[in-house]
Amino acid sequence: MFTLAAMLLPGVAQANECPTAATAKKGFMLLQVDTQSEFREHQGPIVKIVNRFGGPMQTVFSYRGLIELSRMDAEAPRAIYALSDLKDIFPLKKGAAHKISFVPLEPDEPADGEWTFELAVTGQETFKLEDCKYKVWRVRQTTRNGSEMVDGWSALYSPDLGATLAKIYGEGTANEYTVRYERIRPLQR
Image 1 (cartoon, helix red, strand yellow):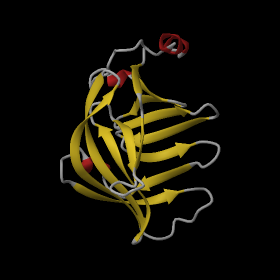
Image 2 (cartoon, one colour; image 1 turned 30 degrees about the vertical axis):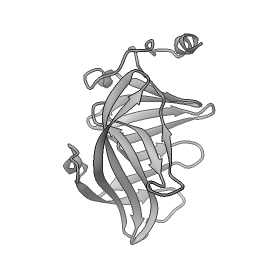
Image 3 (cartoon, one colour; image 1 turned 45 degrees about the horizontal axis):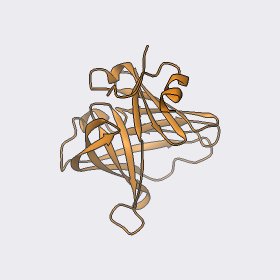
Image 4 (tube, one colour; image 1 turned 120 degrees about the horizontal axis):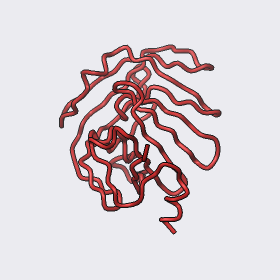
């Protein structure tokens, strides 16, 4: 059944081919139950991610696959303009903390207040996608408008792939849950 599904996805290689830091530049697909996310280098450190959820497509542009710069879809398009230099964040190191000032660029929302995106690299671990194993950084991400926390979660981020492989919400609480990809496939050009 899986082989049939892989054959139906155009440009996706067969199972058990694990993308590496070298081959990820050619693109790869991350999959979970109802989601297909295609990752490709766009320009320099910008990664283009095309998400398919069974309905309309969503396109995300991110900085190195970790910091979302824009999300384009029919329901809630949004973007940010970083006022801080994002180059200073990489390479990630355990214990590193970064505060990024930004301006939200949303069509129906004013950009009032002082917006920040805080990153804290809290550890490194191994993450498994089927037979593929990747070293990932656990990166706590907090969005604030002034002192008010607007959003918070942790990314399991693979620097080799330039992709967030899982997001952990409510970390350290009784309500903690993880949204993760389950499979990975290299794209064929």
